[in-house]
Picture (cartoon, rainbow, N blue to C red):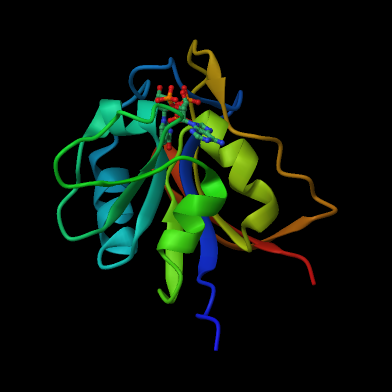
Length: 159
Ligand SMILES: NC(=O)c1ccc[n+]([C@@H]2O[C@H](COP(=O)([O-])OP(=O)(O)OC[C@H]3O[C@@H](n4cnc5c(N)ncnc54)[C@H](OP(=O)(O)O)[C@@H]3O)[C@@H](O)[C@H]2O)c1
């Protein structure tokens, strides 16, 4: 029998202008949002691009699968995959997997995702890396929690 495929959720903090980073780091420091990220992803596997791994390193309590095209790449504490499909196959059997960025990975994973957890950041910073467009014909907003300076918004894929 084939293993259960995990539910794919993407989690991202996105500025009003769509920016999520400058290629190296995130343009803001929102400690409440970092705590939200930690409690939401804790105990679940995460898939990330190699550049995002470079920016945040290995996070405790969660399996990290890093996607890279470099066949000689490795880092302590993480698993390596050479395509998004390989990364998702590695976490087969888990109930849920979080795609945690960055821009290149979000674009590729969008078709697999059933839920987007977007922290809408009330800023418009400079930055070359953006979140893909959230098509209202595909996604519907199902929850919104307003906080000072940002909002936690849930989008679910329409049936
Ligand atoms: N605001 C947020 O919530 C958030 C979250 C995460 C990241 N970020 C920001 O996003 C930026 C990084 O995003 P990014 O788009 O530059 O990079 P990224 O998506 O993190 O990583 C891109 C890298 O992933 C690998 N990759 C991508 N697709 C692949 C595929 N199909 N097969 C194999 N490997 C693949 C390649 O690694 P190799 O080059 O090693 O081959 C590629 O260079 C940073 O500024 C970071 O701070 C923001």
